[in-house]
Length: 255
Ligand code: PGA
Image (cartoon, rainbow, N blue to C red):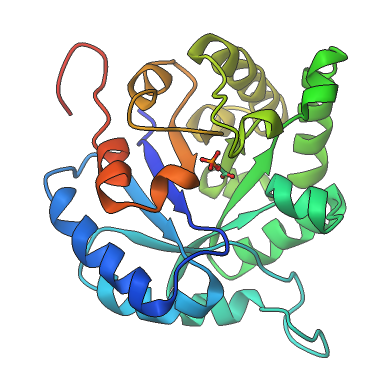
């Protein structure tokens, strides 16, 4: 009942020419896959070019970040309206690299999510614990407070437009994926928090897993009941590996 959503997060990688080349190779590889949502988040500098090459395809465009203000004296920042103008349907907010390297708080992330929704852009809101937090038995506390803080400005009637990405920080870019069971345990917890907060809409909200998703682990992850998609970094940089992730095999049959 929840449509799977597979997203490529290129981070600070690819020039416009490299981005265009990727999309041209990807599109034919995923032509037959129409039961899933596919999203590509290039760096800001390649958004316009990627939007052009994606035109007419079913692949959606995403930004990797946004500033919550409408406009003004915010050197180096990009406003939601500018992303809407480029054709972004989604934007990632609260990625652990932004939380960790740039000190972004849940309150700031909440403002971003609210501002995006006001421009009809769907936020992909990332949460996840560090290795120290997991080892200290704080995973659920951390995830619960990040969710409450980061989703604070999501109006109840817009909840179904929000995607949550659970990305354990210890699994990002490390090659250490959470096992499907560990991931499902947290996804199930996230689901219960979303239902507590938003009621039945919480059941409709999609929860992506992120952290070293690869062609060889995506099938088992996607087979879990509360894993509705993947947010993919490293393995999204090559068209063939990302295409295999988009074409994940549901349990018991071909997609
Ligand atoms: P990774 O990154 O797939 O390279 O671990 C995931 C992410 O940071 O979204």
